[in-house]
Length: 597
Ligand code: PEP
Ligand code: MG
Image (cartoon, rainbow, N blue to C red; front, side):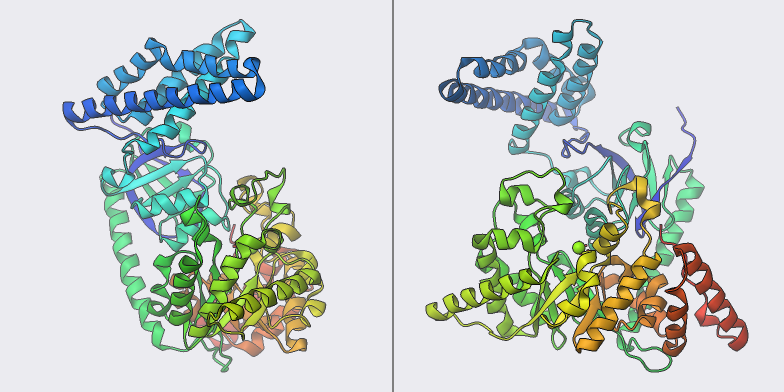
């Protein structure tokens, strides 16, 4: 059957264009995708893989049953009987095996589809007890799936080129894995412009369209699709003409990127001579070489928690930390390297580190709160940091600081760690600059007091906006309220920058706002001269800054901070640039302050 082309709309949050075939994934079972098998031999091997996983799952359930029987009694142990019964039931296995054979698909997909089908049947049963057996079916499916992961699991990269993953949502670590397996594009039902999954997609240069409601129900695996991360569009079943147009656009984009590289040799300087440092945000080792390639002036943020996320469930060793910190400090030279201590928590794997679960982790044990509560974990990181300080200009940054005491406690702990290194005769650098993220509104509003305690501020607008406007940065339902130009945010930024200037300390901005050329005029006008962003964004932001005039921007910012809403700020900036353009016929200064969401 011929399919009609269809265009779905979402938010383009990681730019670029990708074309390929759909592979769908499910948030709770992210490694489920449909993998077509080639020929009878592969089918036989896949059936054996499933049988092996089924045997191992049974063995595991039996030993759990024995353990629970001994410790908690036979009533609770009986829970496992129901699972075992289902798992060993011949018709369950037969359904899965039949599906592998007839559809020639991988075991994960066959289990997933069989569980889905059985769940549907159970849901229709009138008897409540039987209806609730649905849960058992789902649990057994999950357990086989987990075990299958360890039985010669398929890699997405085996699927070949041009894979577009479509999912309800993905965690940052899933995005890292998929991006590294060569996925070309992401389409999500959920997600936000500053979510960590989006940030990872940008780090790996994979286009992402977020907030495409209901897409997982509208597509079928293997459907041809185009992902347009610039326009926030997903084209299903594109016509040949449409595909040709996109291929041409892709080509133009690549040429434009090449041209942009020429800006590396230029200074990020406004027309009236104010120099701005454009630094790099680094999440993954892949980006380290991009720092110099795109002409960044050092590293303004290394999110060290990704080192943990990548090696999870293992904690990185001191040598693992040292190896990457040293590379970062060296690549940044002669500029500074800002390394942020673990910002675990929120949606970033706190449970695995703390073995606790929280109702509201974004307001919970996150960042400096968590590391101070786990000195064993923190010590390893700090030892490596201080050792890495021998190799360049190290700035240490603490995330999620909300109170002065956290800085004091950090300093006391850092002294302890240094005394330890000294006693062991391990060489390390005693001197480093200490800074804090300004991303909690309470910290922003006491920036004048906090400025006495540290050497620099790093403004994290991703969280500052989330916390100040009470808008979850991952939630597509409130994405329109996530407004970087909200007067409340502009006022906080102004206060933080002015407080830093009054205290004579450095201040940088490293939230995603800094990487968007549309915001450059206001950020520079606020007095920010250090902007840190994904290295690939440096050329574009630099080009924008070279068109601006600082003195005029100061005036613009002064006017904007007394306006009543984000849309008034936008409009005012548009008028401002339009007036200047017609007065001085300076075509370069067109307004670019459109809303990002
Ligand atoms: C921020 O909050 O703006 C920030 C840079 O940190 P993260 O995105 O890792 O929370
Ligand atoms: Mg943050």
